[in-house]
Length: 117
Image 1 (tube, one colour):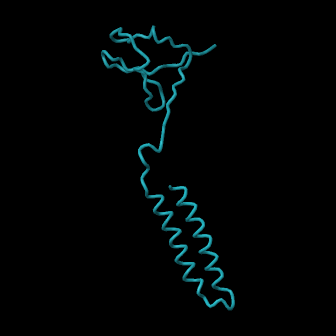
Image 2 (cartoon, rainbow, N blue to C red):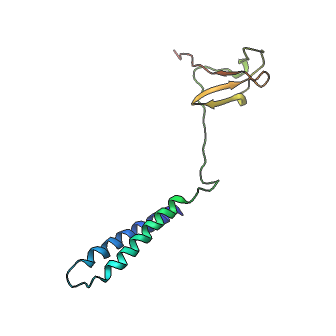
Image 3 (spheres, helix red, strand yellow):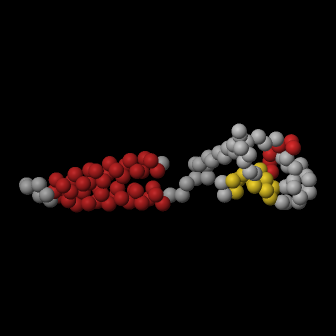
């Protein structure tokens, strides 16, 4: 709906400017000036209306894919504090870095990258 409003506003502003421009030609009588001003005002009103409309809840779909650095074997990943087994569900992204939270003692560790060579 926003795209249609922006396209309609661009068309209205374009023709409004043409009407205003034509009002200053000799012999036009100046009647196009009022029509042009109203058309341009409606166009800018459409832009304002379209930019103020909140996005619907289902409009955006964000997918986060985690590319694990180096060789990570999740079945051997253990908590350093309590020794509990950590699962892939315990990995989250915090400030752009993969972080593992222990479900048993709630200790958090940032995953570090081992060199691939």
